[in-house]
Structure formats: C-alpha cells, structure tokens
Image (cartoon, rainbow, N blue to C red; front, side):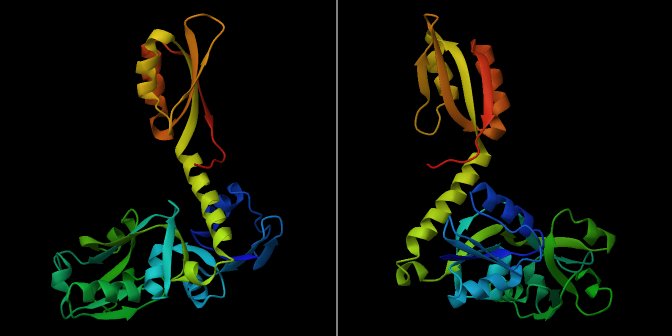
Length: 286
C-alpha cells in the first residue's frame, strides 16, 4: 500500500482531509484516529503533527506527505515538494519596532526570535548577514517587549496581531508558503513499485485542483456568432459543439475559469447567446 502522511491538526488538517475526500479517498471519522486504511485505493493514511511529516517522509518510512512549504524547508529534511495544493497560503516576514530596521541588511549583530529557526538562519546566511537566531515555540510577538530579541520572524496574514504589539513588518518577504505534497529526495528512482501509485495519487489531486478552478459552461448561440463565442470559451482543448433542432443554432460546451465565469456569461449574452448555464466540476483528468 501507498503510505501517506496527513496533518492531524492545525490549519492544514481540515483542507487536506477535504481535498483527499474529493479525490476519492477515505478519511478518518474521528480526530483521535492516527491511522486508517483505504483498501479500495490501496492507501494507508497516517495522521501526524505537521512539523514531523517531512522527517517521516525523508526517512523513507512513509512514501509521501502533505505539509506546509515552510515546515518542509524549516525541517531541513531530505524531502522535496512535488505538488503545490493552493490552500493554507501564508507569507513569512520580519517585524520589529518602527525605526529599528528597513531591510535584512540592517539585521547584522541583532537577535531574531522565531518558531522557524531553519528558515530564518538559511535566509540570513543567503544574504551574508551575521545575526543570532533564537527559537521560540508559539507566538513570538512578545519577544521584543521582553528583551529576548530585537526582531521577530513569523507568518503574517493580516498583520493585526503585530500592530497590536506595536510592531511593523519590514523588508521583502522571507518566503511564501502553502500546503504541498512532498516525497523523499530520489524516491522516484529507488522505489519503482510505489511510483505508479504516487503518480495516480498526484493525478487525483491535480484533478481536484482543476475542478475547483474551472466550471463547465453550456449555452446556445446562432451559427453566425459561433466564432466570436468560441473565442470567449476556447476550453482546454476545444469546445464541444452540437447542432440544435432549430436550424441555424448550435449548442456549445466548454470549461472556463470559475473566477471569469460571470464576465464570460455577460459577454456571451451580449453576443446573442442564450440558455447560458454553469455547473460545478467535481473531478477531472487532463
């Protein structure tokens, strides 16, 4: 069986389980379950701390895993990202009291507090900055007020908690993270038996990603307007076109980006198309 690590809690857990369910895999019914077997799909899921997943995957004990890009890099594990999943997006940045620093070049000789020591130390080294890094678990906003550090590095979403602590972000983002599928470096070469199963798993997740991004659009239009209509809805390969019983009319079906669907419907209507419908796509293979 393919052995897959899944986050057991936190912001990664719920969306990961939802995506796997949409991809046709069984998921646990209770949060206390640490392992389940999906015999129909020949997959075994292990529910682990998100921070530990890269370590387990890099050891070869598990074939692949879902975790955050930030956690993968911070772990230093010999695992690599093979598919971004588009959820749990975050930006990792430096913050400090106003007027303390404007960029990473100003951090020389300072102390930076963070829960992601590996990421910060690597970023400072890449920029040739000699600064100390202090590891703290949990919220780090109070580190400056308590004199533990002059600067913090943390995940920033709205920045509200930083402003409430009298801090402001500065410089370029250290990195941008999201949920990713990972596997051990070199695993595709060393494990020929697992490779087809891994590729099937990735195709299923890619199908979910596409299904969430596109909708299926159907509409009727006059034949003389077909070329202009098709220019608005080219589809992935080409739209499906069928003649209608009423002479001079055709039915068109094509996948369109979900975020552009309303605008496309407006443009089609203005062109004379009618019976314009959109339906959700639950799964696909490209």
